[in-house]
Length: 348
Image (tube, rainbow, N blue to C red; front, side, top):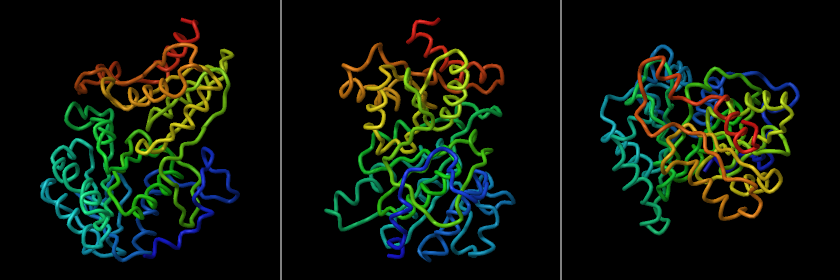
């Protein structure tokens, strides 16, 4: 397969923003678009399908005009029939193609659960490794703009629970490109879940192809008094919180997992053993969520290092409201993280 030509030297962690000299500044959507185009140029088996991907601005700007270069056989809009079309994507992957299926929003994945959970995630195991499913399912979590309960759900905790699936949640343009290329190259299904709140970012992104291995988190900011783990858009809130905390004399270490299945539990434990405190900030709900799973693992592996119970900053167990004022109360910000830190350090 052509994917084996990617140099090992590129499969490394990168600090926030990537300090490589001469690197270009790309937006988050531009970084994903470049990854898709490079993958399609490298491998003719890669194709993109999904609702609205050939519209004027494409999928949140990330698929704009790709069809003009590769044609509408390899880049095509799909009707509102997620169950059947996910089956089409799974079948294509079983036969050696590499689909990237854009669902726009994770909410629509609920219509494809049978294909994703009972088929795509299971075939490799059930066939004894004879059948691979090189499929990327890509969706953008919403927040704001009155998207409400059926169009802004963060459902990554559901998919984290399913054996056979990998779940990717990048937070920077650099990671978006490297993780998308890694996802397309993977021989089994990957859910690529990003967040609308991070699409306006710009960062250094090399033009060359590179992959970021799954399960390798990074420390975005070093500190020694408390560890804050930010997932998806909550990483931005964690970094803003760390800046404010520093002014109050609190040194916070900020961790970005980048992928939540697999996830870099060793990086989290190492940091907790240094600081003794942990705040987990997630875009999902509290009960049975990603924050709960990570907290349980830390309790099992580093209980003796904890100086206080782990704090979770998550959404309340309620459907997402549509009204602007209610949205502001519902979603969490850096202030909620700062309050959690204050509770742990006895500063509230």
